[in-house]
Length: 233
Image (cartoon, rainbow, N blue to C red; front, side):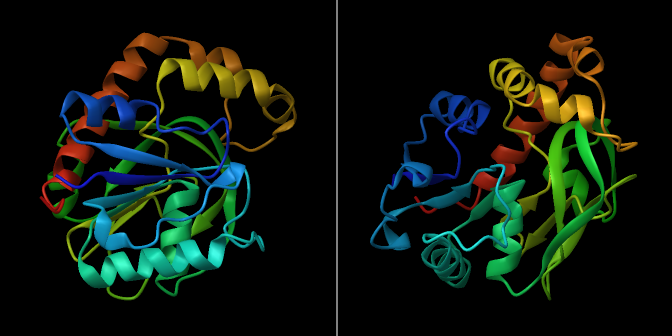
């Protein structure tokens, strides 16, 4: 099987549970450390799917690798090679497909409950409560022809799908406990200063962490299993 290409935009925003899940399912993958100057692959046809992770930068920044990455995302969509975007990754997919990325109505930091918008949401996310982790100040627009799947109380656009195989998510279903604790350490000042009604303090984010993380990863496993149905074998 061809590997999944994972594009990493920030040193501290690695694949975490996504890599754990791929390993468990014996799906090979290759990480491209774009934040560290790694070159983009020569062609998307060498991969069964593409994953784009998050990062603190904006999808509207003039980073030197963005044009090539956006072009590869468009190529993958055109070739029906499944794409999955987490937070910034979902925003970059929106940009690649002609939609905009702009400031969210509210910065979201912490656990939030999301709501289905379409019958296909159950296919992608299951039928239980959808409480997932957020850390973003911008929000993606929905590309033409995409199907919105989830909405949030503080940030409306939370997930959409294109051609039933390319998934953009505003949240971080790939987090594990180690990654979340690292972010709280590195972003302690941002959390302390954030006055958004959609931002929690560190104590609230860590309360019942094992329970929240178990539920988050159960949802993530459902998401990844559904997405992997389209991987090129």
